[in-house]
Image (tube, rainbow, N blue to C red; front, side, top):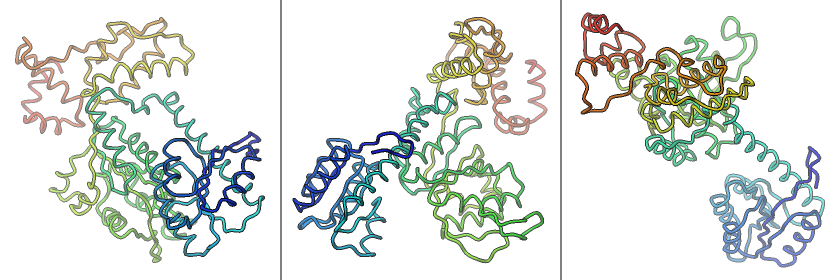
Length: 452
């Protein structure tokens, strides 16, 4: 059987029908096309076969003696979510077709059917499975194109995060991802979408701080022509564009209050209106949000709605900073090194021991993003086979080992190192003062004393 690209596409097919003649007829027709076929007469045998071997397609009779083919659809979906399930029945009705599709059936074929109908159906499934495999191949190659997108980790903290993300990925729960800037919250949100049953549908991202309140409202909910100056045509918005899929709202803490109320309505009632339009529209979209902000503090300060916070925080996932996943620093740095060396046609085989030590000991306030930038810079500057510490940014090359509690080191030195790290990790002097529990004058004096 030829797919659209001209390649031969053979399927592994499971036939489930209690009529021997139907099983025999379908098996002969499909095997003649080159497909591998297993035929069984009942639901129990079908589930057993599905657990034992791989199938691309299952043809399921709705009436299996005293058993229900409709129930079998649910069981097979749970066992083999990739399998395409097609209902075959002599008792076709609109209601049964709708119910089968609701349970996850791929198609519906009334009896009696012709040889050509069966052949065309198998070809259709073959084309879909070929496309799905291409997507899977592209996802596997993603780590070569963007190594930091590889979520593999040896850190217990990150492993717990990934395990929790996988566990809740296929639910409909709203997820709040917390973590410092640069930890990969967007990558994790995309991974959660890919692990869910919504994966075939769109994944969209909106960065809340990047747009004005007016543009952000239009970007999320859409607008109709003439709704405001510059609205020269209808725009459906991201919620509509992600129908059936996932919408990721990055830095949700920066969402303006008026839009927070509208988002709350989407979460509670699954409806919204476009800007300038009175028509209420349905919203079938899963919302995942992320923040590096203290949302609880924002709620207390009335900058963030408390009811929206609880709606968003159904499941909270914490992405640990890179400094708490030190086991991952060197493996990730080496993957980045290999990637940037290929990209820039450089023959660089690794890091010197001094560089490795500097990478291990740095606190990485910018997390994975900072590591990526540091390695890319080093690759561009280095003209040797191994990257020495001199090719690292100044703040990495001169980094001192991280002390442990109880090390033989003065309190003054610990204070200096702590202040340096807090200043690197915070966005302003005011924020650093708050973290250090110091007034600005005291912090200025400490900085002058330590030459920070």
